[in-house]
Image 1 (cartoon, rainbow, N blue to C red):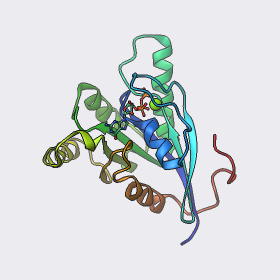
Image 2 (image 1 turned 90 degrees about the horizontal axis):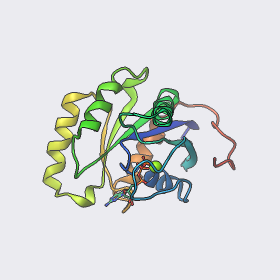
Image 3 (image 1 turned 90 degrees about the vertical axis):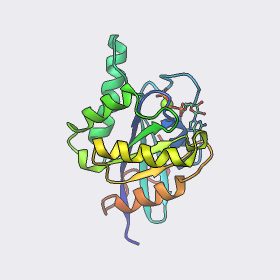
Image 4 (image 1 turned 120 degrees about the vertical axis):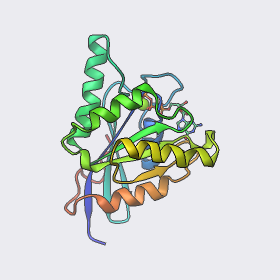
Length: 184
Ligand SMILES: Nc1nc2c(ncn2[C@@H]2O[C@H](COP(=O)(O)OP(=O)(O)OP(=O)(O)O)[C@@H](O)[C@H]2O)c(=O)[nH]1
Ligand SMILES: [Mg+2]
């Protein structure tokens, strides 16, 4: 396989499981995970190697409707991560479905310069029945044209290897994005 490298931004509402997914993809605790919303407050990078590909995952603060100045900066930083990335993974929570926040993010995705490279990851599938996932996948894809949809549990690991392999195969061919040993 030829060498591929690039950036994959993880975006979603606060608490969607972005940092959990980053840690799983990298295989180390790079980003703090808690049950509290708005844990990640700035962009955090972690490098994963998949075969001959190097994937630089960019964990971002959760996206929500900001009220305070600091909140605005955090949300801006999340969108900046997506705008700079080769691919964006939009995480939603299976058991919460299409919340107001998810709906707002989907509307905003349309304005993203690279809106053609947004992948949907329905996370926390361990919390719902399989039947619910089909309906949610369909409703989400009716609203936005996701390149692909993955059903995952970032915490338990379900579907994560498949997602990682797929992401690696879609990154541009070229030299490594970051030196091999760098992990932040
Ligand atoms: N049941 C279940 N819980 C999960 C899963 N993935 C993440 N969580 C939990 O969801 C909570 C939030 O996870 P984080 O990874 O911190 O979420 P985040 O999207 O980074 O949140 P912010 O940084 O606040 O935007 C934690 O309690 C995780 O353990 C999953 O697949 N299943
Ligand atoms: Mg986080």
